[in-house]
Image 1 (cartoon, one colour):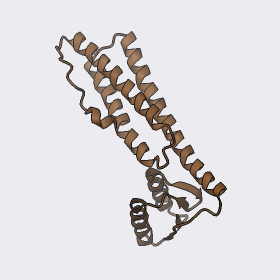
Image 2 (cartoon, one colour; image 1 turned 180 degrees about the horizontal axis):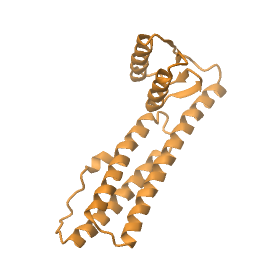
Image 3 (spheres, one colour; image 1 turned 45 degrees about the vertical axis):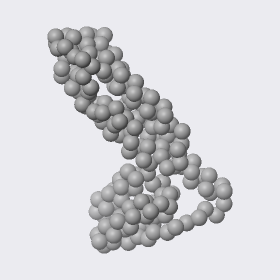
Length: 186
């Protein structure tokens, strides 16, 4: 557990701590109180954050805590899973946005290099985002497989769209891979 005492003004330190804690997957119990699983990686992260916070003139502490009851532990686990579920839901929503865009451009027969490039960037963003969510899914909350399937569906749809762009532009393609590797999907 990370407990910090941060100045109200300027807000930049509080915002930085909040962003870093969210990025690593911490659950906020209340203002300035954060929980992470007890691993050496998380301990290093918290120590580095504490060093930074104290270097900025604020204070904080790191505690290893044990829930007082099974109910408390289940509540904290539920909070971790709820946070991940929101992230996976947002990820899956963005996959649907990409698929809808590809479908729209296909209906319009807008098979241009500019559209392909834009959609490739969107897929690359999704491809980079999913591993970050998975890294924060400490307790395997059950959404990773569906998200991987959605990402694979996007990849396949973009490959189909790319083939149509190549056909429209008169470019012969022998299943040339897109700008990223399939291993990037995992």
